[in-house]
Image 1: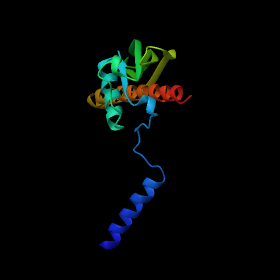
Image 2: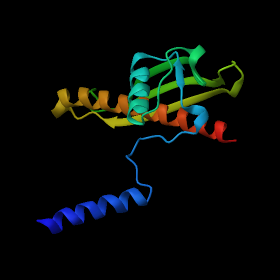
Image 3: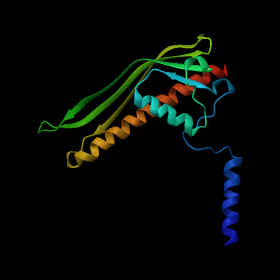
Length: 162
């Protein structure tokens, strides 16, 4: 039994020494430790808050108290049919999510001019599992929101690190 505990402790030490961190966690420069997301849909706001909480990064209460403000413009989601079966039922769908964003500092100086972000996902519509497909679409949409958050934060980090 003591050998098992020793092995677990050794693995934990090795993982921490190699720079291992949880997938999805952000490590941000000091200038980005207080972020505010201005605008965006409720699902985007929720994914942003989850990502920041997971990374132990405080979210500013308002744009005035933030060191970095990310502004979201012209957010749009759509779903379109890609192919039909011989019966006329949709076989494949494409989900799209687009918006533009800019990054400003606490003094409203533009750090990154307005940039477009366009994310697309396709999925197969299996007619034998209709209820599961509704859940799958929701999961895909949440992944798209999370990808949007990751992209914005990574681009903001590149601006701050310059």
